[in-house]
Length: 514
Image 1: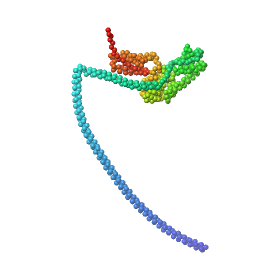
Image 2: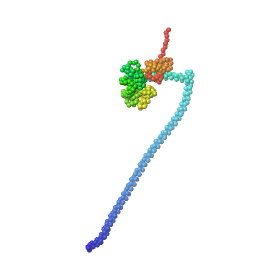
Image 3: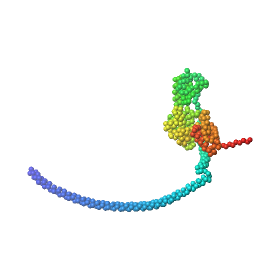
Image 4: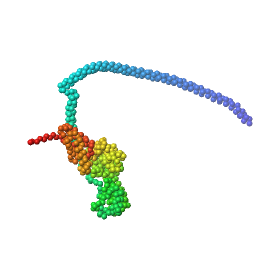
């Protein structure tokens, strides 16, 4: 127990002493570390201050160098600008000097011009006085006044100019006609040779053959009810006369006649002829004709080689299959004009497809001209505009009869092709009254000119021969008269082809031996 107490007492005494001693040792160590750290911090601060001072000096040196460099460049640029300004000043001074010299020269020239104008005025006055004296002397010598002399001179000059003008017109016309006739004949002959078309003159009647004469009674029906029904439904007159085994259908509308013909033929084949059956057959015939019209229009476009035409225009083309003009089938005529237009366009280097299109549609107004008011030309123009045809085609349709001026070469080609197709022998027929009226109108036009003794329309109106009074019309006047007659015929008459105007002047002396 004592041992334990002794140990405890020893620990109690030794422990504080040990703690105190260890604390002192630790404090000394810490003080030493703090001193070292302070010294290191002072060294770092000193080095940083030295570095900052060095950096500051270097920056100041760089700034001074940059400032000096900028100053030198500015001085150099200032010197260059000053040199340029001095150069410009020298140029301006030299220009001012040259302008001053020019102004002085102009002033001197103005002075000289003024002096010359004064001299010219004096000379002009002298010339006027001399001219007046000369004119008075001429009047005294010739016995004519100045107005009389002027009139005589103008008359002489007018006669000379008139003669020379007539000679020049004749020479130029002859030369132009020779060249134009040669080329035109080549083109037209080539086109006609390459386009051969057959035409059959159509009339206003159709004939339906009957198997026997007994069929006429069945067509008439009891108390004429069958024939009345057929005429009412078709709008066509049936002529049943003494013609053996035939019935004549008469009507101005060829489409109605075709419907009546098809319906009647179907009724004859069927054998059952009564009003109900007639109505059924007429309805079927109308559908067949509509299909036929469409097929004819499509066939025409395929034959010509024109595509992209509006379906309604194609249908109207098909209707022209049943339309005639002076006995010429309108659809065949349009196809022929399209072919001729394409051939002529190929000869002179125009758009062949566009020429064919314009030629095919040029008479499209004839398909409905009996249903709508207006000429077939205006109707055709309205139709082409409605279905978005090109301006070239519209102008060709509008100008093919000369109603408006042609605006393109294709319009002139269509006009020429239309004339060729209509005027060739056998294409159309004219009534005697129309023919004689045209010849009379030709002679009336030529007889209205002063100096014409008499005139004759010959060669079926293709030539007009004019006999003039030789004492009234001179050789020079003949050229101008022929031209004036041609222009008046063109403006007042409508005719296919061309009319030759021949002016004849002859002096005849007659005496008798007694």
